Image 1 (cartoon, helix red, strand yellow):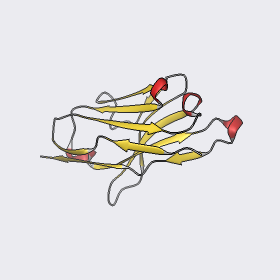
Image 2 (cartoon, helix red, strand yellow):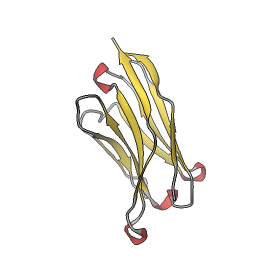
Image 3 (cartoon, helix red, strand yellow):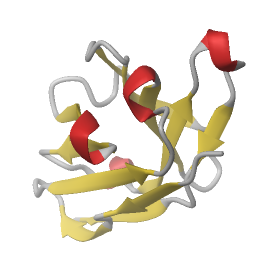
Image 4 (tube, helix red, strand yellow):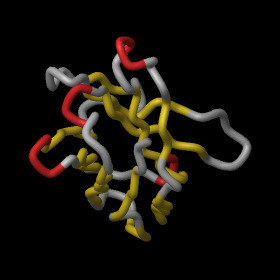
Length: 119
């Protein structure tokens, strides 16, 4: 069982920056892909960024060039650095971990952290 706990959300003006963190429990973090999704009212869930167990990142088109995902396996933590924030980035941001296929490819979700961009 994996638990994910996000932090770092908040209220920021357009053009500002935030860094989200997601700490995972358990022992699968370093062999799992982890990522961030977001959900805004009236919109579909959107992939923001993910990073493979090998450290290869992938980004949603709307955030490419502004957001950076990283991971620290020693701390079981993934980070999302968000720069040049826009009002349309306002959403709940959810951390996601997918265990390797060899372990069943289970999905785990955090409770989410709210990001609100004004201006």
